[in-house]
Image 1 (tube, rainbow, N blue to C red):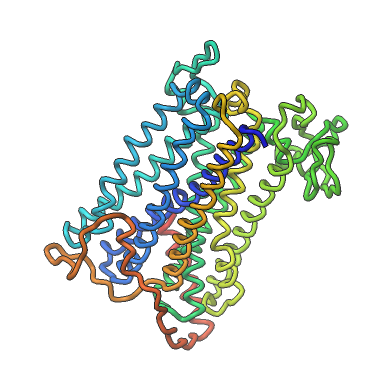
Image 2 (cartoon, rainbow, N blue to C red):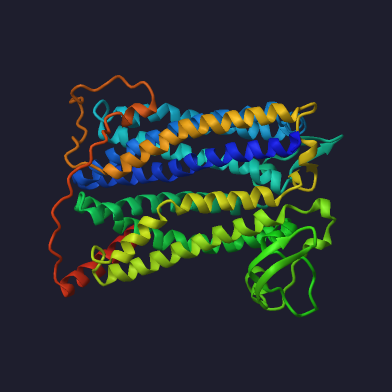
Length: 500
């Protein structure tokens, strides 16, 4: 392993940790905004109890996301100084805009959101929650703009290997940016949706806070019924855009090595083990023409094969091939669970359907897996380019970088991350296991919390969460099937209409 490969592994390791927490907080911030809006509209304290619980989860996730993001940024100077030198005039301002317009916005209102519920008026507090949610989306905008430019670069001037801005509008709104941004935001929302829905399903099975858990599960199902099919459509359009601008990446995703007979179309490879040395798939199971139908929307469409370019210009096929199938497979499972949940809700048997509740529980962490798999497809699939078609990854690594130095820092990162984030994730799990508590005091101007602490850090918002588990509530008697079915249909229709 040379310094280049180790630097790639280190960056992939750190960014894989980092992306999980911002993606979760993107969805959580909007979820908190919805919960507080419902409380303001109805003054139903169940909404405030839910808000207080999920704000603790948000505080921990936000803190870990900030820590991992700061560590990641140092690598641009230590491991990728040539990239910073040659493309810094384009990438530097985009990342600076993210800090100025998003991070400062989040940090400015975060303290009031977490600690100021009884120190400002309810509408002012809701405004702060909205600003934090907006900040997460603006942050996503600028980060995706920078990444998208590296995949589909335009609007720059390239002279002597240095990239300088030419047209900022074209740089930001490059050809893949709209698809990549929509796909990422939906992925963050769906990931959060399944964590929230899976937690509610678990609490329902244990009989903990039944009213809150049932309300949250219904909202998760309704949102999933909208967002998951939408993600399938957005993913299809993103795939068509990738086929246009990065055809070799699509060939790696599909394991398509050679051009077939004219008019024969492209098969869909359901399973194979790509053999990059022999330029073929071993143990292949393929469905004729289905690949053409999905990729080109025609039965005889063709795509560029991997052998159309030199071996040194091809990405590592094996990880791209399997990561893509993991992402798509999890997406199809989510779609199936959401469809089954809608049918169960329509019949008025949400609480009685053990299979449906277990499905949400099992898929609660699946969004993170799909998110990582999709990220690996995107980033590994563009190799060997760091700026696609213009600058190779080998030309971006820092000069005179020793492999032993990178290996030492990688080992240090792995050890520290395992301890810090292992403890953080364990604490999050215990907090989710405990669940929301009824009877949280709603905010009122001029009545501060008794014994409230001076805020010191985001994690302070979760300090009050103890480890003791509440005793399961007594199981309620299920209503009769017919009235439950009628109530289920009415609730299903009203909730979907409200969210739409």
